[in-house]
Image (cartoon, rainbow, N blue to C red; front, side):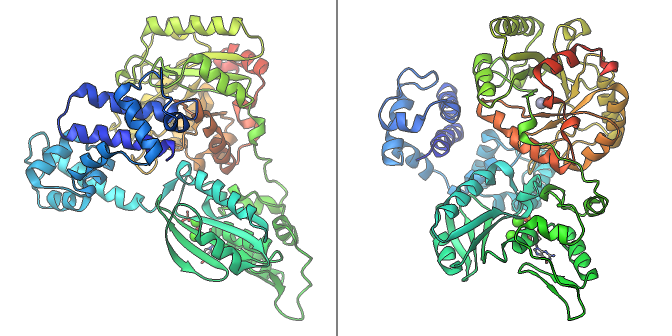
Length: 578
Ligand code: DGT
Ligand code: CA
Ligand code: CA
Ligand code: ZN
């Protein structure tokens, strides 16, 4: 039993109780309990197993007993009995955007829709539009969501695969016949989502290694099992390919399986121009007239042999990196160690789970020297946005915490909503009291590109808007970006000296990596912001640095590499002088 499964069980109970129209307070208690389990600072599974869940806010007596049973036996009869009342495929419907318990209940009751396929058919046969609370528009939207889900089901977010990859790499390293291990593919290149996981291990006993992998945890079934390659389907969804090669082949396999395909094609051509063949096993002279290939033990030496500076994996998309490597003009990319602080984080004052003090402690644990808080503003009522009075109180609280600690600074900010017309959710005299401000779009997503772009630029023209939050509003694999002209936004950012956020919540990774080089070249600064709603989510910074590297960003392009003193001075400058 782990924390996630425990939380999921509570969450499912809440859903099923909703389907059964049960007491809303009870439903809320289960849903709240799931949140507590997810975010509790201590080992809540061990506490539950020991029957020790006392005095935890949000875990009442009924929940406590159920968590105890769950943690000790691995299942909960109450949950299983509820589940038996519904077809199991019904629960897939909850993953469809725009469908909640209320609508699913009607679909199930009136149309016997009990699976995604049922729903697809019912929509195509035009039977959904006439249901109470639906209509033709809803039906059309559902069809669109279903289409999108089919595309997205083949891809996975970094947060979904990162823990699996770390675990598998650890397990591979533990094997006595393992010499070197690496993750390859799109994950190593830091794509925003990945299709599958590619791992590589160097060994003189490949068959032993692939056999070993077959026993890894979380495997649903083995798809292909050979002596040097094994492909498995993980119960979490993605496929994982593990290749076992000799230590001599390792650098070549690493280079080949890291990709991208486009980068590899160009690199292989370069080898051919020198009279060599390059593949995943090695680099060899084509015939006796070819020059000898220099000895190669490391991936970087492949690039050097081809008269190139070594190219970081994130840049390998054949978007100019090979030309830059040839001219010795590759940028020195930012590293996670360069970060000194971060902005755009939430606390329990709006929709976060932790207090100012807890967020500060977590940031200190990560070795940061400052933390920007930016809770939602009043228009974001669904996120419990702060009004002027609550915001001013929070600023005062932050000043008090800062006064008691001269080693760490909390910067007082706000994630202020950009209204439909481009005006902000607070008056300038309120914004003037903040250390900084992130302006974000959280409403009216359907404006056309021109209006949306003008709306955002108008907000950026405000002298108090320090940075622009999640530029496109996309939710990876869930919601498309709204229509917005990135090129014009970047120009406006340069013009108004507005920083653009790299929101590194793995659900967003927004602004997209494809735009950062352009922004950088126009002198626009980036702020790598986790948009953390819990203390643990501050660790999203790692994904942010990887995406920044993919966007060719250097230390000097990222504002939160400034020291605490430099940052305070920077924010104190009038915007046009930054
Ligand atoms: P993904 O999994 O769709 O997110 O993307 P990748 O890049 O991880 O692609 P994948 O897993 O199919 O293959 C891993 C790498 O192996 C890929 O980036 C480059 C290399 N590779 C695979 N197939 C080919 C190929 O047909 N030609 C070349 N040159 N390289 C290939
Ligand atoms: Ca892959
Ligand atoms: Ca693959
Ligand atoms: Zn936001």
